[in-house]
Length: 352
Image 1 (tube, one colour):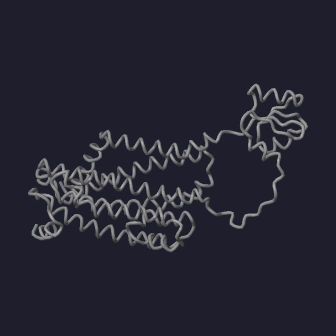
Image 2: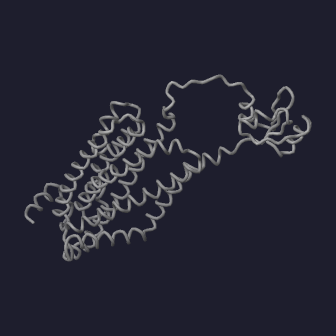
Image 3: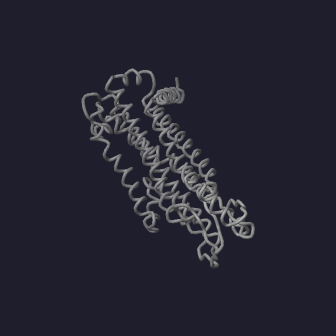
């Protein structure tokens, strides 16, 4: 069995185990529900246009505003329709708008004389959207890299703790064992993100957010390769951390640097998303680029060449961390006599 075949075998095994894991399935369902609720519920809760009872003479402006108009004989019939609950509001002589307990804003707006409006920056992003989009990108990368990274580390520790790793290493090369775990984790993470993105896109289409979808499309397209390389970088660090200890209880002691490399960029993007200079710097740093660069593409602050340069830098960094993580992993994997330091694992690999 060559290395490629062994990698496929390990990856397939890891995927099968994870797809039967109830925690993984519940977390995936949880993310799908959040995506659906965040995109569909606002449109559902907003409701449709008001139904208005009005005489034929006053129906024109309301129809032009897209309201549902119900023509009645006179003002008294219109008022009665409101009291019966068959319409949301009525317009009677005056004009006066009648409603039961809440003013119908869409009816009032339709009857009002609006001044002309000229937008100096018509393409500006809504402030609420400008906050939610960076939060969504950062949250997805943070949660996914943390959860799948921890699972990779826990899988390695479990194999060391039960001595199964000695049997696995006798059957497949160590590098194939690591590569299979990273490939499986990456595929599962991308699959989970793809499902969430699909539900979000369908939800935005349902809520008639076509303009927001068109703005997000380029950012989402770039987010995929940035997420892929960023995840590989973080996963390699988690794999090395897992190989350094022999008990699940000790993972906290070696994982703190890995967690900080994910948490600090997450909070930096959240709190500095409206600082152009800070975001420009963060979009080139490998640990924050997966979220910062897609955000700058969404807001239109990045030139066409910038994501390419940032992606090349991220690729080089991910490759370096992957090689370094593999070396530490190989040097510490078969050590079962307590916690192994990075230096010891690095030197041990030199003698293999």
